[in-house]
Image (tube, rainbow, N blue to C red; front, side, top):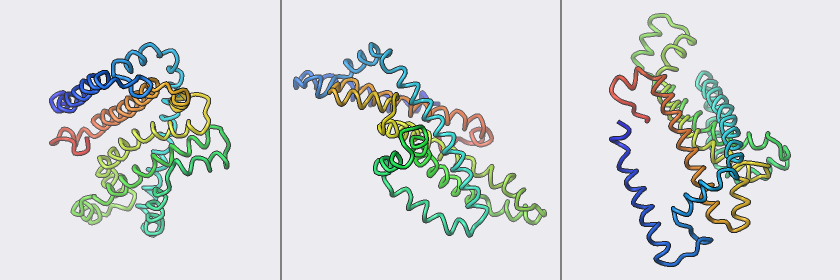
Length: 255
């Protein structure tokens, strides 16, 4: 199924790379300004010992921030759903909080918490928890009214209604939020590493750009994109494994 649906974007990507590869030497663009895909690929292979440690550091930071941000996001969504007055009070503030650019907030976090792990995790948590919270809240509200009425008629209490009806119905929406957050976690980790980390893809990119090594900057971009796609694919596989009742009953609407 993936191969049948995915060959078109892969073909477009290959064509774009071919055009890129052909136009750079045609217009005699210097490598420091815009390297070719071949030069980027050679640099990615040859420089593996130089950035492998940075890559592992970013993976560790992204995964840790993603798990903490996802847990907070789900917890906030559950509380706001179960306590309507809190939802009415804090939901607008959640929307407002996302209008603050992370790149502006990051220097303040360094001033308040220093250059340690905490400000980096806060940045990743901030970019991860919001899509999960909003997706989960929407999922909880999409519960079938007929089933909800049936459970109330059967005498189910609030806890039973939530765990046996609302939570299962919200799972597809929750996984949609997790997929968005998984990709955001990588970018959040890179932004946090720009604050002054010792290692990470963000550090590797900063060092490369400051020395005009454009090829290495493109390698860093390639790594960020690859990590984001890898995390996204991992969530998709986890979704297909957990929500078997949906994938076996007519296709996944969120994949």
